[in-house]
Image (tube, rainbow, N blue to C red; front, side):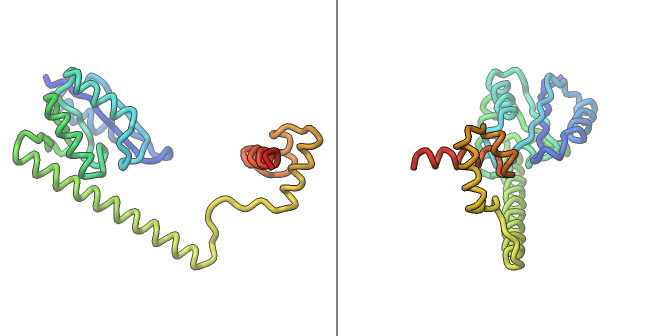
Length: 195
């Protein structure tokens, strides 16, 4: 049996990896993989400093696994450069990245190189489209007068914060009394003491 790690990733905390893990376990059973570990992660696919993915790479480097199972290549990486770089490393360590469709992205073969490039380019294109849609949505909302970012603290609220601090109140007490966040209270008081 081929020793493998299941790697599941979602982008946001309101999502979970349950479906990915279930589908990958079923796939592993059918294909004859021995699952040595299941790693789950909540992080953007555009980031390459993911802790759980680093564990997968460490296991591959130690040559304790021969495959990494993912539902699709975009769960591993959404950047062409990152995908190809990590695939090269995995290949050097005798490990393949295998998607749920059964496609093994093995850079030691011409087919694997071609598939990795195509899948990665599509994932990167999809990420760019999402980014463009978000920018367009923000621009449309701003055009309608919607404001983004933290609301500004009024001068009267700032004066009240300083008044309460002068009375010896803690940041938490000031935040509760003024309706200004504790972090902002701390920032305002620090700025006042530096002035």
